[in-house]
Structures are given as C-alpha cells and as structure tokens.
Amino acid sequence: VKWPGDSNFIQVSPYKVKREDGGTDIYFWSIPAGRFGGVKLMKVAEPDIERADAYRYFAGTDDKGEPVWSERMEQAQTVVDDTAGELSVVWSAYLERWIMTYLQEGRGVVIREGLSPWGPWGEAIDLVTSAEQPGLYGPYMNERYTADDGRTIYFALSLWDPYNVFWFK
Image (cartoon, rainbow, N blue to C red):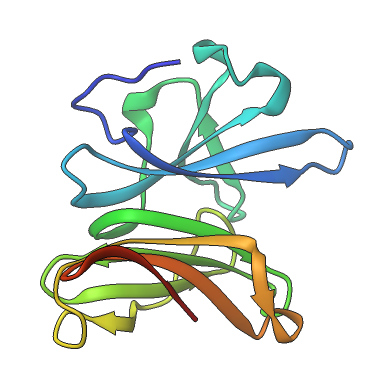
C-alpha cells in the first residue's frame, strides 16, 4: 500500500489495538516526508492491511467525543500539532496512557502522553535536549523494552557524533 509523497502519511508508527469484538486494528500515527509536520492518524483492520481502500482516517470527534473515521485521506485531522520527526507511539499499561516520542528540530527529543490514540495529547516534555546530545534523531520505543512494571521505558536514539544508535532509558 502506498500513499502520495506529498501526503501526511509517509513516516509512520504502527501499533496493534484489540477491538471489543475480538478483532485487531492497526493504528498508524504519521507525519509527512521531510520529517517535520503535524501528526495524523489512520487505522485498518489487521486482515485488510494490504488493501488501501480499507484504511480509515481520523477526521475529528463527534458531539459525544467519539472518534469519526473517514474513508477519505483529505479529511484526516491533526492529532498533535507540532513539528514532529521520527515519531514512535506505544501503549503504557502502567500509566494507562499512550506515549509518543519524536524529534522536535532545534529542541531535541520530546515525549507526550495521550488519553486515546487521537488524544487529547499532553504538552511535549523534554527527554533529551539538543544541547545535551547534538545531532539527535530517531527516538524509537518498543513496548517490549520496559522495566519496573512499565515505570522505565527504554528507547533507541541515533546520534551523529559519534554516528551510532544508542540505548536510552
């Protein structure tokens, strides 16, 4: 499945979410090419992952605060309005919140927490600043790499000097 190169669905962070009916949806938080744009959200039922017409785009919430999903990519709404690069999203059972990390150019790596996949998302909090570690990018989390019953989160982070991938917590 491909999306237009000028869309907001180029770099993605996928996560499997169990539905009440026992099925599984895969949520994709995504940003545009070039790394720096707002975060949008789409989902697809796991068996339909290879069918472009099966994807649904978060198009806001209704009067009751429930998500509205659209078949049309153009109706996708921004869930985090920031300049995000290399985002990563996981569920924290300990916090009972969604956790999002990404690179914010000039600032460093930030973390946010969300009440639902579409938000609301809290304010960005510094994890690693550009002043501490110049040349940062790619703060990727994996839900398997936690400790202390979820109180400690490990994430991979790339640095330019020396160029390598490092393990942070």
